[in-house]
Image (cartoon, rainbow, N blue to C red):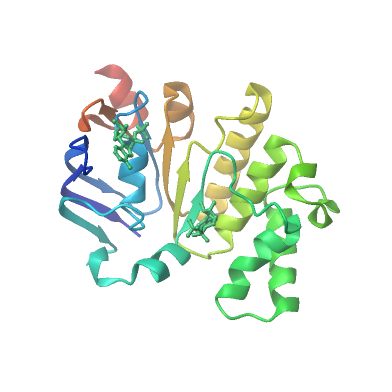
Length: 228
Ligand code: ADP
Ligand code: ADP
């Protein structure tokens, strides 16, 4: 499912221009990485795809449809979203963190838990950890649960905001490999935000380089971007 930014600008109420006239198409079935230094508008760009942030001007289209025509809460629920510290509910077990999503979309509890178990296996979480609480997992394991929860939305689109930045380098590489493996099976449209150019090159089918002030500086395949 393609995502199209058409002349999108976000100016926050205090006057900060976070994203400046962004026009870009995230192609269907690609991992497109938004990369650039802190404050260049990566998170803002990502959050304009699921209406957590509304553009000041311009249009975002999802599969050719203006997202302003979609109810924001439904849109958010239907798009997988992974953040840096996983954002798991601390007072729910790992299994229930993931099962919450299929429950919300109307499944019964047993089905939701079965689906959650499947997804935890998909992301390579050791069996048996589903009963634990998030704080009883390592950082890398928590991120895997975050990915499983995002996959539970069963959406063709997955938004990932620095999902691997808080884990140590060895685990980060494992998680990157896992994402590439998953993507070769699932073929989702993934928008991945990172400040790490090596990570961008490793994961991206396409790379969008932003610079502070929110302007798109470069866009292309990793080799095209590195060549410039
Ligand atoms: P990045 O993800 O690349 O670090 P952000 O999209 O978080 O960048 O932020 C882009 C710019 O917008 C920064 O200058 C940041 O301080 C500013 N910003 C982000 N969120 C808000 C907000 N809610 N209100 C005001 N300014 C914001
Ligand atoms: P709030 O409305 O208070 O921000 P939500 O119930 O929307 O809280 O989200 C709770 C937590 O789940 C947050 O950490 C948020 O980042 C995360 N979250 C929200 N939507 C999704 C989603 N579609 N997939 C995965 N995690 C999500």
